Image (tube, rainbow, N blue to C red; front, side, top):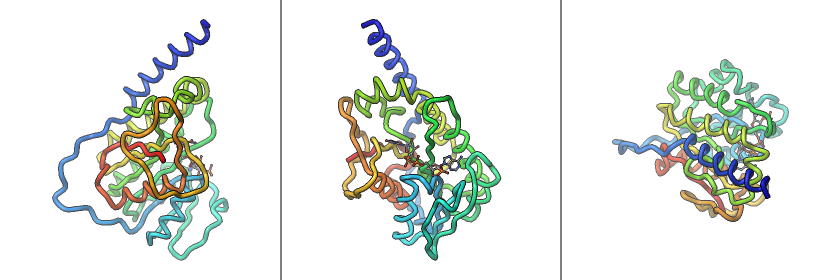
Amino acid sequence: MIFLLLLVTYSIVLSVALMVAGAKPQPIAARGVPHERPKRVLIIGATGGTGRELVAQALERGYEVTAIARNPAKLSVSHASLHVVQGDVLDASSVEAAVRGQDAVLSALGHRKYFPPSRILSNGTRNILHAMESQRVSRFVCETSLGVGNSVGRMGVLYTFFNIPLVLPFYYWDKTRQERAIAASHLDWVIVRPAALMNGEKRGRVRHGNVGSFLWTNRISRADTAAFMLDQLESDEYLRQTPGISW
Ligand SMILES: NC(=O)c1ccc[n+]([C@@H]2O[C@H](COP(=O)([O-])OP(=O)(O)OC[C@H]3O[C@@H](n4cnc5c(N)ncnc54)[C@H](OP(=O)(O)O)[C@@H]3O)[C@@H](O)[C@H]2O)c1
């Protein structure tokens, strides 16, 4: 009983901290002219679940795609419009080289070192932001997660009181640092916060905005997440906003 009380108290305190620390949507001045559809896009995390979908769907949509991968051999796709470059987000010079000449960057960066404290997401993203600012590439679409900022609690009870506080506290805390770095940049960013990710089917119907449930864990496929992220290259609807997405 005491353990349960302590867990609930700790989970609530952590939730408040994640809420305060996540990125806040920012008001934007109306654009004089609609932005041009980018032609060349860089995909970070291209060998991962969402990243592979981003690569495949970006090629289908006719973009000139550059994928940065620590191990390019992992990306077993070849296409006339796909360039794969070796690089690591924690190595600023490889990120700078990959960003050069691009019109937009999409990031599906993630890792599986869930439990220990780490700064892979935030330090890697800072390198991306720095490279984009120095190369004057303005459009950045980045995948984070429901459960940060104004979406705290929306991964459902199991995540809010078990998965996040007991398994993923440092991972989620790094996501707040990642989001804050993006929000502090001068880029045209969109932070996309998906519900629990699934492999497989692309339904083509995505709820977006203030989504998720305080009770149940909602889901969405990586394929639909990638499609929504690519849509953000062609729309200003969520410019400098943090939309949640789920089925
Ligand atoms: N799982 C969920 O239910 C869920 C829900 C909401 C949001 N998310 C978030 O969504 C994002 C994408 O998740 P996912 O499962 O689709 O991705 P994933 O399969 O974990 O792939 C992550 C990608 O990031 C790359 N990466 C990691 N460290 C790197 C580095 N130092 N330099 C360059 N690339 C690096 C990985 O490359 P390697 O192949 O070389 O490792 C991989 O391509 C993550 O941030 C995750 O936390 C997950």
